[in-house]
Length: 109
Length: 115
Image (cartoon, rainbow over all chains, first blue to last red; front, top):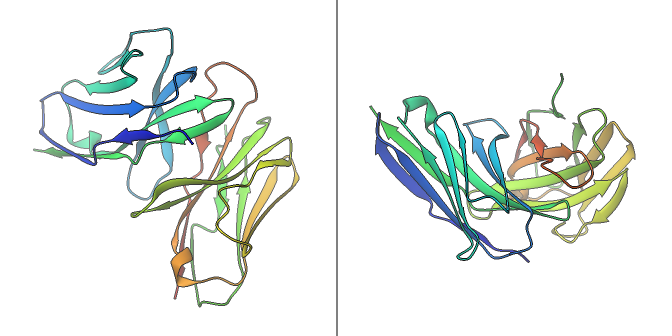
């Protein structure tokens, strides 16, 4: 099956930028997503990018897509303690979603 | 609008008992997914339905697991008999059919502990 990989942990200081990286294998995926999971909750959609785009910005969030390298990143500007959570990237292929293992973001005050 | 609703939120039971997890998808959504999340394996897709019909159950770990969707607004995931290694958080998600940016909407999950 498809393989979506992420690093497991990221620690940043409050106010800094966070960059969470993801690699995927299926070049036919039409959409790629970023989800956020807070403790005790389900996954919440943060943002998504269509595969023919290179970048998408949504307030403090910037998504970069490098289709050639099959690399996706999520940048969070001015990271806050409330951003501490697990972030999942996912690809969508014919209505079947493949999720990465999640990156746990720790924001230090 | 109500999101995906799962029940119970927590379940603690002894091994060998039957466990039934329930899910109500968002009204109008055509696809329903069951996932299992553990520290060791992350988020695993167990099974998904389209218009109440199971499409892919290749992620169901063994015959002890079964899932049904008797109508568009209700699905169950059953484990019988349960084992300690089934302890995990089980999520249900639903989505609209078709191409386009149709993300999955997740419930808050059922935290299952098998003693």
